[in-house]
Image (cartoon, rainbow, N blue to C red; front, side, top):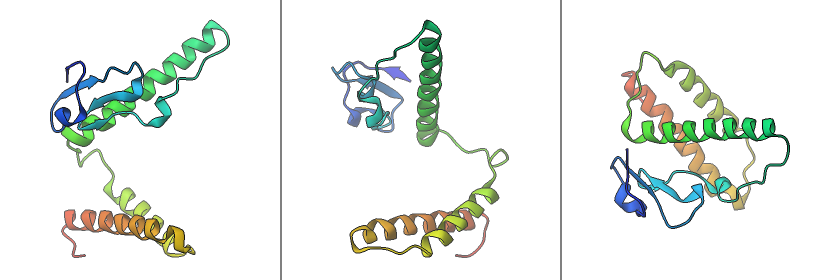
Length: 136
């Protein structure tokens, strides 16, 4: 990835470019055509405690940041090694989630979100089945 200073997220779409706006907060780092970090990174929390407390928090934050960036990078540029990923376990979890969702009572205000979520789960199940060569 190449750093490009004050760059808009449109410039980073499908490119290996990252940058930050003129904001100083990590929340506004852009790459992969979007902001990399969520709203929870927008308000830094003041750390109180010992030097060891600060070192522990730094280590945790560093690991969280690395995981987020790695996940975003792999989502856009990586490939899943089918030998290292358990699609059967994923399919089982999706089927379980779908089963739980079908048993939920849905209220008018949340019905759109419910059906959208259920549709996404169903699409994921179908995508895995197609990859296995099974019919929908």
